[in-house]
Image 1 (cartoon, rainbow, N blue to C red):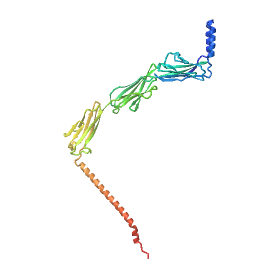
Image 2: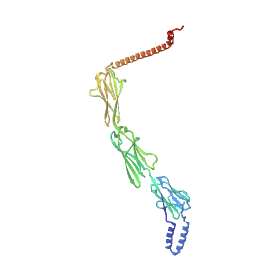
Image 3: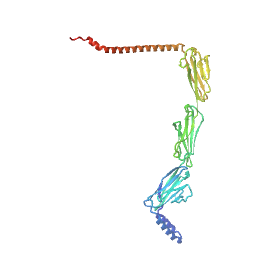
Image 4: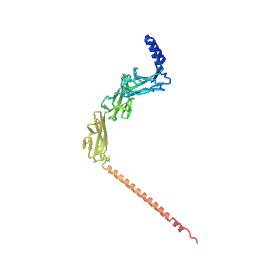
Length: 390
């Protein structure tokens, strides 16, 4: 917003006088009389001050332009567009653009609204005050344009763990240029942005290089746009699909206490999780053949009537298109009485501990009884021991 002073009354009068001098004799007198009358009607402008404010508006919304005068003396106010065409002269609208509507007209203000603002409406609008000298002030309308479209593109729909993929996000045709931020879940990442300008509009493309892991499967990659014309968060997202090799875990389902003895049975279950899910798992005995009495049923390994020859390492293997993985279980078969001897030793220790506790308790009780006995008979003992006085 700025103010300027137009040519003063005397300057206008001088120019008009020169024009009258060049006029034919019959019109010369009439022009001079008209000039003197117009000069007498122009206020001096002493103490008046014309001012306005810049306007920022979002495309499609309403802009309000206000020409205001301090200490007005009923001078004429006029509003012009960037092409110097008169929008309003006082309360009259010469311009045929019906988007301009009068909101208020008084000696101190000319307020006009512009509906359905477009990018072509940007520029300087001039407020003029007809005083002597005339005053002029301008307001700048700035139009904000939100992104027309927000697109995210992933180089590969399905990635393999450990692979680096490229993700691009494009915010098209905005003004000013947008700021793009990247998130993987709740974690913010850093991308690289490029800006293209065309006809005062900006298209921003941001590139993100992302190394994926199995934990990223199903996690959203979010492209978020920040722009002064956008309220809240404008974003788009794509969910990562990551393939990874199996994860294998062996679970002992029998015996429950975990102690394997001769003559007992052993049952192991192999759990394998991967993407894609492994179709089958296999059991092998490392460095030896599988016992003849072992039974394999899908992910389960069952060995009945264990003996010392079954000792060894048993491996569960699983695979998919990404890779292969395995988990090992080391079997050691104890003697058939190993558990019983352990139980007997545990019972012996429990009995000994119980006996000791009873003895300690009995001794404490005896000490308490003796203490109370001596306390009660102490006085009687003193009387029987003292000599009589005759």
